[in-house]
Length: 121
Image (cartoon, rainbow, N blue to C red):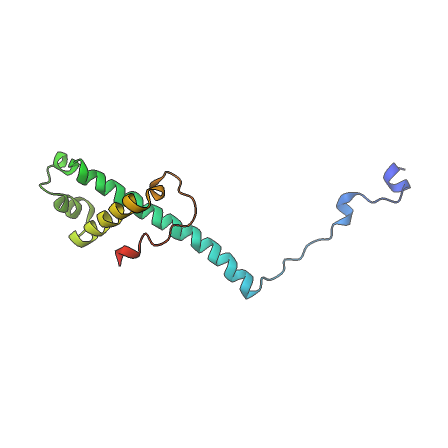
């Protein structure tokens, strides 16, 4: 007879009851979905800013010329399928972020980036 049974102590695993999965309330589901949505939206914003930064690099260094394009607009249209308005929207947002919120261009920005894409509308 073991010491734990002599003392009337049951093993730890015997104290746990089998858990029955409980259904989440609509509020709990809404909170979970909101959390996931915030993550996805941040990823979209980061991808947008990264694409904008690369377009700005193509513009600033005139790298489109190395690919035999006369202009950045031609490069964006032919190589990326970006129309003129979309190209300049990316560049406008990048320039604004670089001037007013350079921390957002960090490799791993902290927090939830707000307002960055508001200019795109």
